[in-house]
Length: 242
Image 1: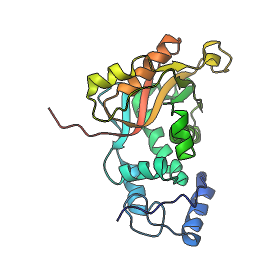
Image 2: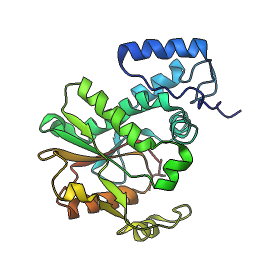
Image 3: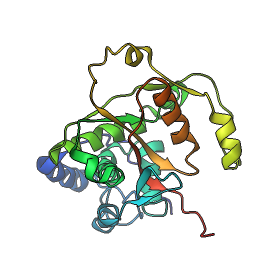
Image 4: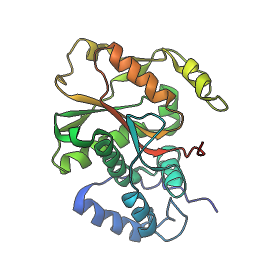
């Protein structure tokens, strides 16, 4: 049975008080775990443990790290947050994304203020979903990293410059051709009016498959004089060895 929808409880809360409130909501308005379908909580202890203890690892892009492989229960948690409005999952997913940011940067994580730049969603996707999942995760990751003592902001600097074809069924080379030139940096970032001077950009997304989208985003930032220092995602598609 697929996990139950959590759209009726969209509240997202952070910190120790937030965790207590989350537990209270799960008692008052119980739903099945979005990760495995068991328990009467949106995120059961077992799935929370899997998400919290996964070790970030490099992806097909050497400068990008993912917090976990795109397998269940992480896959189901991302889908519940992105497509079914389980917005309170943004907290634990954002914490995982924050770990991937630190892993990708290594010793450079605290060397300078950071700027998390989420991959942009199309306007039609945001309207259909009722929220921008990647922007929400970027904000949650920034809060998690600030609690760890880092100077971090999350700002949406990218937008789509042209339509692209559906990526489903395309191989890596076809995805790169499909996406080339598809993203651009917002004009306000080009003019330096964002107040973000001196911050090191880090691209963030929920999922990396071939890396074509992140590579295009890195190109757009570099062309605007804002080269990305690293990339980080919550999950990465598992590719067969060899």
